[in-house]
Image (cartoon, rainbow over all chains, first blue to last red; front, top):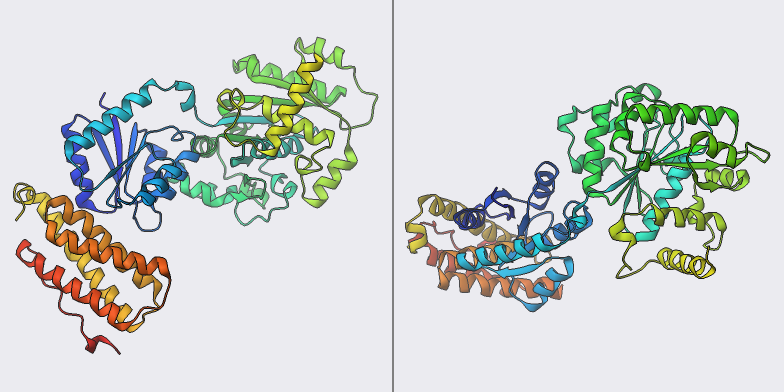
Length: 404
Length: 122
């Protein structure tokens, strides 16, 4: 199959010249006349390389490149800047924005074909792991009161702080969801804005517009304010929205309700990992057994499922060993009892993961965030490590040295 | 007529359509600047038009016209960068360049845009 190239330019004449040149070279060429149109097109079509002009209305080529570099599905895609701006300053700005190559107009057709060929060859040689879409982490419990929203929200915050990238937090507890509240965000937009649309009409930029931005880097898709609006959200809506978010965010965290409704099942199907939350009491343990049985019926890979124990009450509770024996699997993480801190965090709309950097509970969420991160992030030191990353690295080094 | 345009009627139609559009935008933006020298948006529009004309004209091989568009683009970009108040004489100089550019394009099927004169000042 011929490599597919997306050319972005507000000049139809230039688009025709680029298209003709590359089609003669055996490539398939898609065109977009603006950055916005390009982003919209990339929600539906996969391409192997992007050629962009610089000076375009609404969004210039630098901004488009920066946005493409933030999206998991285009983060490593070769980008060639094709412009009549020939100054050194413009070239430096292009490379700083993230382009791989720079060619000035007027271009020689053979040179354009050669540069495209070289960029595609280099991209083919790059490791495929870089091309994986955003990682989706679902936080779930079949019984209420286990702290699902608290864990989902703090995990999303910790991931955003750890990697310095935007993280999507999707509240699927569609009736009276808590995510926006936990981050003190007003419900200007919610799932209700998307649920009104036919699934096939929902586009990536539409989803971005309804996300509520939080200073931590988390962007929340909040549950609707009115219970009857929740009924409009279908499993198909959830699939479409998550697919679009996975293309645009490295991490998508799902705050799920305590049911196996159609939207919940669609979300669980799309999750890369599932944190199954329980508290050490008989009711919660029984609900967890039921959830695990359902996951088995659904043939979910057991490796995707991690048990998280949350002490939502003061001891005594069921012993950890007994719970692990019952499930024939280990509890991966334990959140200690801290009702007062949790209630304070909710009342002030300030998540624990943004509390005192020295607090053990913040450290816990930061460490979980690291362990749940994509391998391509986890296995390399970032070029510009965040404060959170430096703290996590220090703790892991200390544990390694201590043999823990 | 450059060979590239002669051999490709579709490209020629696009070239003519776009050049007429950009020349019109350039003229209107310069007219507005003459009346309102502090209109930053008009200055941006004029620069964008000159920039695109530079690229398109070079691409089809109309070098003399492209050089004139490049000269305008550089002057407009500097004015944008400097963020200083424009003078009427400065805008008139750009208008003369736009006029020259338009005359150069007549043989290539682009209608003359008309002069921008002092009568335009309200």
